[in-house]
Each structure stands twice: as C-alpha cells, then as structure tokens.
Length: 100
Image (cartoon, rainbow, N blue to C red; front, side, top):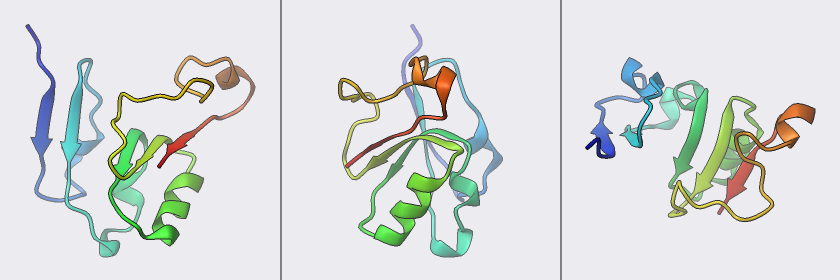
C-alpha cells in the first residue's frame, strides 16, 4: 500500500520541491523573504503559515499557484462552490481558491 509522504527539504530552492507525484505527498521547505516568491511558484496547493498580508497578497495574485491555503486550513478541505481542478470554470478562465 502506498502511503502519504512528508518530505522535509533543506532549502526553498531544492529541485525536489518542484516534483508532482501521483500519490498524496507534501514538501516542507524553509522559506525567508530573501528567497523571494519564485520557489513558491508553479504550485498545485501552497500552504502559507504567516500573517504577512503583503506576502499573502502576492501569493494570491500569482497565477502559477492553483490553490492557496492560509494558516491551518487542511490541503484536502474544499468548500462547496470554490473552483478546483476540473471545475467548469477552468474552461472559461483561470481559477484560484484562497482559504483562510
């Protein structure tokens, strides 16, 4: 049986963080403002544990981040009506979910 994987990486720019796997997994990376938002881009679901509204605004506006979770919102949680992968809105426009 394949179980979910939790992988702790040493730096935000580690190339492994850009890999999508066909089973539940999470990459945990240290991040600082000096790293910039580049290592956080091209993400299916990003969890940001911060109260930095400037950073959160930048992440919410970034078109390469499909879903943004702020704080302790579980990555599997989805409220009814919010866009998600495969949602009809994907055919009409780029959609994004932001949960706080």
